[in-house]
Length: 353
Image 1: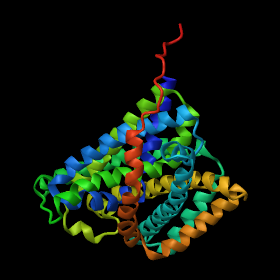
Image 2 (image 1 turned 60 degrees about the vertical axis):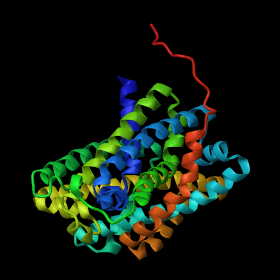
Image 3 (image 1 turned 45 degrees about the horizontal axis):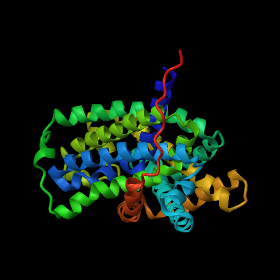
Image 4 (image 1 turned 135 degrees about the vertical axis):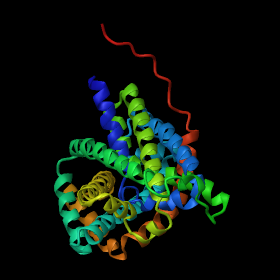
């Protein structure tokens, strides 16, 4: 039972690392899947398969090569010199992603809490700084609470959407995008999210190292991500095209269900953004420490201040501009991760008598 519990923690951390600002708000699901109409569900199936396969492979490889950070993984995949340059590029990308996360928190405060965008940025920064003092154990714990709650309330929105008008729109929704763009989208989505999740999953794979636990956690986490993607897609499709006006479309749909559901769901959206931001900044700080000999808390503060400055551009413009571009940059990583066959087979393990 203890191994099952650890597998569930890994699964929830996997989900929580991927389900960030873009996913929880609905903007990311809209950008990569729903806008492609009736192709969206099949595209989600492709992404889910990649999450299960490569998420498992990444953590098992990290355990095998004793990778302490994503730079060790990149050196393994690309070689020492190229791997170092890829890691430098990923640091820049992660700074951009964390800026989007922080901007998403600001949008939650301004669009649904009427507390102001800048207030949202500052409150999230201070809370993130405090939690990061607790380390990886705090990240595992908070994801184990927030992710199951998010799954429950997302299910409630799906039921509400499927019992209303437009329930079958995910089967009939038309798109003016080309088939090429549609079938590249799940690859870009998986490549971007898997390469970014290295910051947490690589040190996690090294820390746990049990192959059975890691495989089970990757399967549960990958399938969980796929189910939540499909739930978001069905819900958003039922309200297309009107729902595109919102910065946080899932929050707009939650408002239809009732005030209490709306407030709880908005809180959960914020917590999902927050957990992903905490996990990503944790991984980013570990990398920066290897390059800059400055105290961890000072590095964390510096990263948060950079994200605050970048967050002034706004959540919607940052996400729709940066995420597809980062997905293109991550395709090479996805290809090499899939082709890597240097993971040594392990002898079978038997339970102790």
